[in-house]
Length: 253
Length: 305
Ligand SMILES: Cc1cc2nc3c(=O)[nH]c(=O)nc-3n(C[C@H](O)[C@H](O)[C@H](O)COP(=O)(O)OP(=O)(O)OC[C@H]3O[C@@H](n4cnc5c(N)ncnc54)[C@H](O)[C@@H]3O)c2cc1C
Ligand SMILES: Cc1cc2nc3c(=O)[nH]c(=O)nc-3n(C[C@H](O)[C@H](O)[C@H](O)COP(=O)(O)O)c2cc1C
Image 1 (cartoon, each protein chain N blue to C red):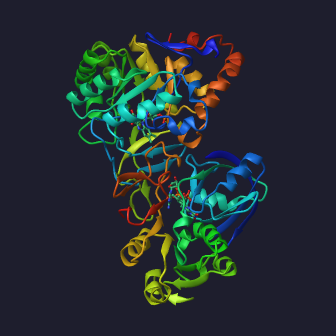
Image 2 (image 1 turned 120 degrees about the vertical axis):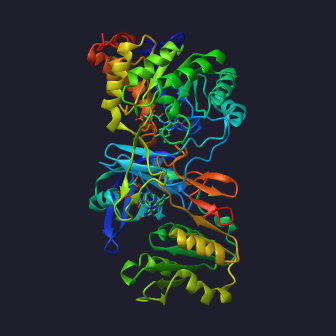
Image 3 (image 1 turned 120 degrees about the horizontal axis):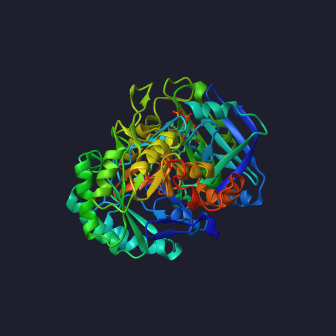
């Protein structure tokens, strides 16, 4: 973990309440930190006027830049959405234990729900460049909420979109879509991030091993306050350091 | 090292008054990766109990203007694991005094914890937490009743070779009554304050944000309240006081010491600014120059005198 300063280079709406922010790191130490980022890790962002930092997944990176895709749900994310190009942010990064791409096997399945989709983008990029036949199933409430579909598609993922109201792609939840498509693919492993109800359903329905990314309210984000505890087969674990990504069979949801 | 920052807590001498507060610094190991934690005056470890504890259900964290609420509920691996596994790892990287914060659910548990901790190498001070607002039928019950507070203090004193400081709760009508009771029961010093019991509600779900409903408020928003209590207590007690609550800058440290604190503990600020303790230690000499302070020990309680 490092405390780094980034300058906002873009901050644009993707939907009515989801924004994408690209930030540039000016220091060499920061660029080195970016190189060490593992998909599924997160950043803890300091926001003027908010006491606590805001945990946001690392959606994408390049040599000098980092990308967040975030939904406006309250005070901090609303303030982020108002920030302009050139403004500076104080960020702790990289945090947590991300996805383990080595577990993927040849035909990994990625499942994202709503604002749980962003951390899967970096993972998909890694898996595809490692030559994996990558299937991505993304669920949203409605057509207007869809994010990052073009990015996944242009990477060469096998992409299925699901909306609860059926306004685009298949109708229903990601698990409905999986029931229909799963048989043909015989996936080797899965990675998922999204609402707890979705993670629970996957844990129950998918017959293969996988990794689930969790969300919890955090004090520090680096393992000292014991604020973001979740329960696992091995007892209490911290979402911020042991997770946010956990072995699907370990996690008690 | 800058001797202008030296202070003493009874017979214990510290190179400076900066101590990370219990529960906000883990066992120091994460911070040791960020900076040399030997710059600290002392280091207070996470509240330790006899049995390992899972703590309360999540969510355990909420936010407020200039502060936060927590209902962690003393999650810790238990005293055996702390003394056998964790303290040796801390000692490998840290050579200044360790403050052992202990929480019991009965007098017997406090006694057992004090014995085990006072035998632990490098533990130079026992901090008796009688003020945790997040666990039922324990902790704070001792902190809100002067005779119970005195009883714990005397029992821990009787078995501890190391100085015993009692950590007081602000969730009382008159903190000086508890403070005096602890002093009379033999406490070597006091630490105040622990968190204030509070609450937040999620307007959308209409439910409390914290699964435990209530939680302890800490952070800058409690600083004036903590300052007032430290001032009140240090006016009526002779034993040294560690001031805690909302400190996040070098000037807060000086203000807290002027109010009567001999040393300070820094809590929630570590969570949002992991370098805060180191930065404060580095900034203190300059600020002292500006304020015409030769030695920090000169200003302890200067406002109360
Ligand atoms: C590891 C991790 C990764 C995340 N990645 C993303 C992401 O990529 N994109 C995205 O849009 N959101 C993400 N979130 C959720 C995001 O942290 C919250 O939406 C955000 O903190 C809300 O802040 P606010 O000030 O707008 O809301 P408020 O409700 O005003 O926040 C009040 C407090 O509650 C906390 N909080 C509120 N909702 C959540 C939540 N769902 N999870 C954790 N803390 C919360 C805030 O951090 C703050 O401390 C992630 C959360 C975690 C734990
Ligand atoms: C996440 C968290 C955990 C805490 N755990 C403990 C604890 O285990 N024992 C204890 O005596 N105090 C505990 N405290 C209280 C702090 O040590 C301190 O007394 C309080 O937070 C006020 O100081 P601050 O405003 O600087 O945070 C905890 C506080 C926080 C925020």
